[in-house]
Length: 219
Image (cartoon, rainbow, N blue to C red; front, side, top):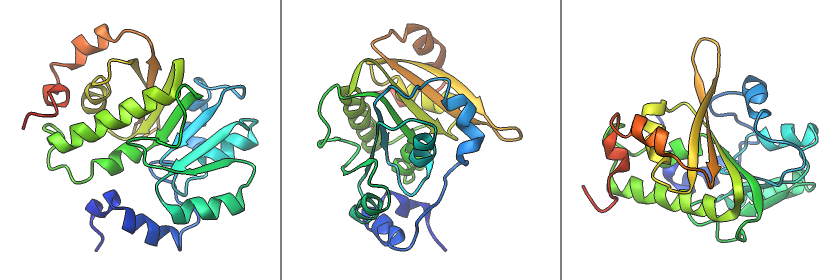
């Protein structure tokens, strides 16, 4: 039986992507298409981080979003996608650094369930480890760096707002809003706008899950 903890391991994904050509975490594109398209337009430069074997970028490309780059840390996946979809850019990189991406080079950064994969080893959704907080801080800083001023980070997730919003508010770079989709079970789209204040959301959510806002040096 597979353990979720392996989702945080690079070797697991290298092996998986040797066989897997397509898989959708959370939900398929048609489920969240209407919500996603409220926040992006075809003129924007889009970076899809932790792209995996999702068809999200391909579906956007079919709708006229032709300026899309995709990032994953699996060399196996990136090599395969470069051959299969040469019309898009495919970059092997770590999303905690995005070291291959220049500053202020994208209007939109989006991810779907990648943050969940980074946190699979956590024992408590209420009290994250310092290691998890450092990882999130690194991802938020990398995303903020590659976004233009007033750029948008879109995170598609099953994590409830009272956990995810405080985690996102660790970054002083953006304002956080929530949207949702789904009929019987709701999923969330977290809309983070760079360069806007987050005081109202901070006041609302900081008391709900304060450990997500503590210093990463504390245990």
